[in-house]
Length: 315
Image (tube, rainbow, N blue to C red; front, side, top):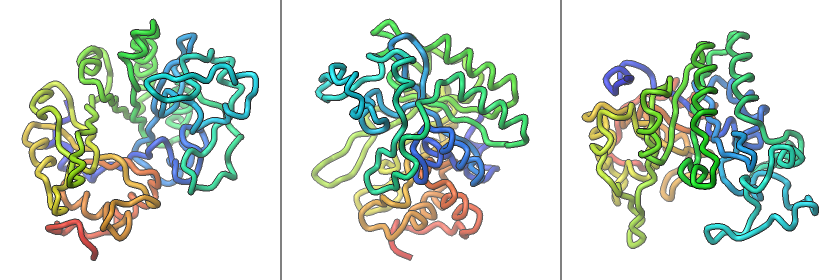
């Protein structure tokens, strides 16, 4: 197990969130490649499952934000309401049907010049890509998330065997790995079979009266069972913008802390820039950050003096 103490001896890692998704459509090979070129330590694919049981890379189970599915009249009748959201869903499409769609930039303020170029990649293709990159001397690892495994399993689309087979291929090729999931039960299901450190993702609960976030379950629930946590960055600060103590508590329990998500074009209220936010996060001991713009995170990590400020306030 990779302990927090071991991580403390190393520089924080920069994880390219869905690739270099600030610059290219997320979960495309152009996005993954740019992240590697910028020097990200890890590239993050999110995995979902098609109707015919194929693992593919999308952040969401719905398709309208990140693909051009709405422009395909042949799929108009696939749109439906699921969990209160009216959309097209990956589990209603076979891989062959999904491959007729093209990836697009889901965030409206970002450029669209690279939309409509690449299809949705499969996990097998990502594994091939990562292995080829490793053979070419690129050192970036892959930090892979399984989305909604319980929901897919309930639909007869259990991803486990294919997921573990892909991880084994990557591990055998020497690709550095992490596995992450929000579902603690699923992490425990694959524990002992997954050749990668295990990260428990945590969103937390928002108090809408003051905008603060708190844990819904104690960290020690998974102490000794996972290698680290991936918390919502809002959990690291209290209502005054001061350190909530979450990082220290996780480290006390032997857990690494990899926070999500820093974006140059979306910073918290009261923060001047993503660079200021990153400086605060690094100074407060996080072991890694997920970033849409990995080059910014790398530059801050490598060049900013990590003198711990008391508050996340302007420089």
